[in-house]
Amino acid sequence: MNKEICEKELEPISGFTMLIVVILMMLAAVACLALAAAEVLPSEVVIGFIVLFVLAIIFIPGFKVLGPNEAIVLLLFGKYHGTIKRDGFFWVNPFCTAFNPTKKSLSEVLVSQGSVPLSANKLSLKAITLNNAKQKVNDEDGNPIEIGVVVTWRVVDTAKAVFNVENYVEFVSVQADAAIRHVARLYPYDMSEQGDEKSLRSSTQEIANDLKCELNNRIEIAGIEILEARIAHLAYAPEIVSAMLQRQQARAIIIARQKIVEGAVGMVDMALKMLNEGNIVELDDERKAQMVSNLLVVLCGNKDAQPIVNSGTIY
Image 1: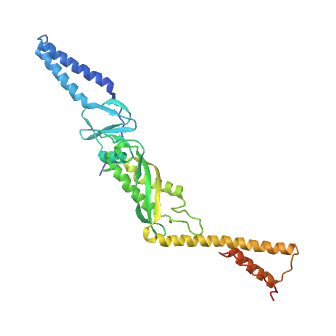
Image 2: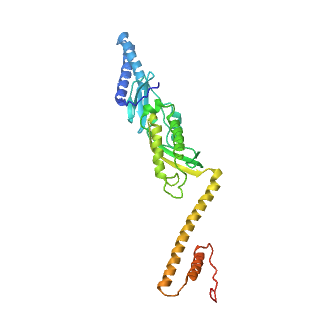
Image 3: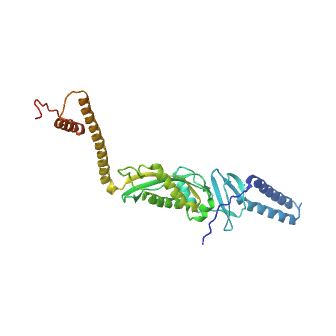
């Protein structure tokens, strides 16, 4: 059974202090050799200073330089030793080795964003944007749609990111694909006629929150925090675009017609009331019906009405 490793932050020695020590050790060794060559010191003392020089050479690989928002994970003889997350110049055990199996993948991501690639197996603690490719999924109604997401994430636990998953950059990408497939199946592409439910197209903030929570639950094991996850591309699949466009147009026409009819009925009712209140003309039921029919034709028609002058009566 795999053991989950959690981050242990180190407090390393100042690199400047150890740099002075190493320089003094090397100068002392050189001075000793010079005095031995002049036969001032015995050979036994010279051997001791040679050992001191060798130690100074061994100490040199222990110097580490970190910039802002960078970290380095250290292994000591195959075991996790700790993580340095502070920027500056430090010295650590020279037998520690930096470890980052995803150095190449992360560098490619940073280069694509215009950032400087990492070196010396360092980990980036900066916010990183992942723009996943479009994928075809089915919404709640079973309609095939194309959807793509933009995910902003960062590493918060370096040990989990390095040791708990094989490649945390690819892990985020794969889990983003899985999360958007899951979320897309929970909602329709567009609202229903009642308009009382969330949809992928109209409920942007709600979908983003659900996607963020889903992703955070999936990648918690990798020590990564999702800062933001939003839909960047949303469209019907090409094979149903034409049919869905016709349906949207038909729905828009129906809604528009409903508004036109409601307005026309209100105008006809207002006209009849004004005629009755002003005693302009007395209309029986048949003439009212004829007037209502004419007004509705004028108000609801797609084209301008053609006036007809009636010189007689309607009887």
